[in-house]
Image (tube, rainbow, N blue to C red):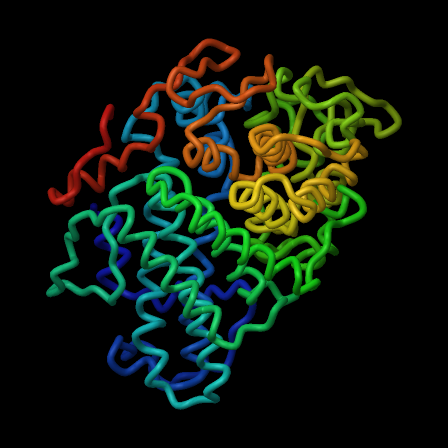
Length: 500
């Protein structure tokens, strides 16, 4: 657990100064070399800088190149993705269901999220004692609690039994080598943090990309939906909580679906409309790096010098969509042809279905520096959470139909109507698979419902025993990812997940 130990036992002021959304005013300290945890947190600028540092944990997930990227881990685990990148062994191990604890993707997720948690713990502990505008202080603490909850929610879903640390840690702390907590304890802390963030005075929306009240309520609805399913199986009470919380977001009327799918990857639409919460990037300053991974391998269609073919969709998944689904038309969610770098008047057929919803046209055509944000929560997901949860509580009802049919209307598909509870449940699941594809949502749903989508039958198989179209069969061990080797080696209180 060396990486966790390092990230929680010391506070990096350098990291604090890497602000994604802007920080200033504390860089003129006369003697920065004398900063310590005891004397640093004295000014409002210090409160802002420590909270800014928490956002940094969102970024490493998307860092892409010839070794693939951590965000791909949960996509290859669905069996719905392909790659042309033979040297990206971490992707291939997950795709072929032969993953192990040496996978660098898992280590990056663990380290980045626990570093974010460490900075959140510092903020939550130290910011209350800073003399500053009280409303601003409470909003910053609310942001910290949301981000801590987000990191823990992902960690507990991905790794299962994990350390739950909510206070700053130093070399003398009992939690330096913390034992794992139960998933239920982690979920309870996530809910507590989000409920407290709800009351912190955050704005409903925030166009700068900071945490908003809409983001808090949306994440809480997702947490409740997960708690209703596996592994906790809290059932109807939590489906109702999920339905009620997602309905609050809907009723706020602060968010809306884009009329065009193009706006999902339009940099000018960052943090607006459908985009409730995103990881923030800025071209030439803090550019995103996944463009090279979603273009086909060395086909010469991009202005980028690297084209890795790191991830794209299985053809069977594309063909499992309903006839005339707009999402699989050319250059909506996917693309199968593109112009050549050497001659933009010539178009090349690519032979597969590459991901267009994350494609930055300006960067790929000319600038090679992408300012696209990474979507973490968007309004379409909230509508689908409500539709599923409402159906579980009350059976098919007009509001559940309205929510899922809003998604289908944009896809130019007919409204759902007259379905049984089970039929509507599976119809909503299918919409989630299609609408939120390649947004790091599908595998989490698979684990939550213990089902996998069969692209041939369009039905949902039991998770354990489901066969991917290219051969491998899911086993119980794939319900979790392995705890990284370095964490097990350095913290003997941790126990590796079964099967690894």
